Length: 170
Image (cartoon, rainbow, N blue to C red):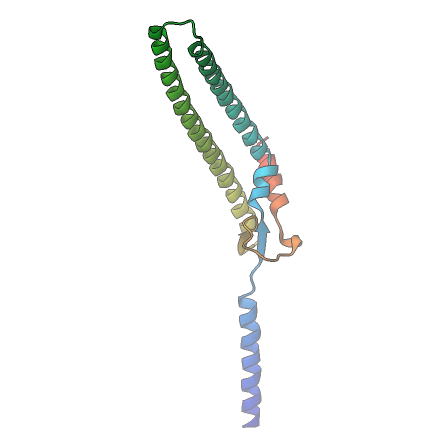
């Protein structure tokens, strides 16, 4: 009976050791915000957005200058009532045009930013998945959203992902 109890205890300990090894997982962490900011694709995206924004700003500035010129003409006391009415109509139309353009420009910039971000994230996630499969990593957690309280920096693959992204864009 004593041998049976000892044998049962040994078997139970063996199961505990085996089951704890069965649930051991290899995990890694990545900061996608850092990937976006530091990768070549991320830097190119920033430049594209900056160029687009500057172009939109130039058009808006030109439209604002036109409005200022119309306002100056409207403030001229020497023009006739008919001319003032015509200028007011032009001013109203120019103001509506400016507001419409600003809304469209803002929407276009937001959409471009979303498209670029999705493209970069899709590439980064593909690299992360390939890296995880090749290195036997069971789970990769994203850290930039603050959902992970602690992780060992040795398990952070952000720099590796940036390196692979940069090498694949050359």
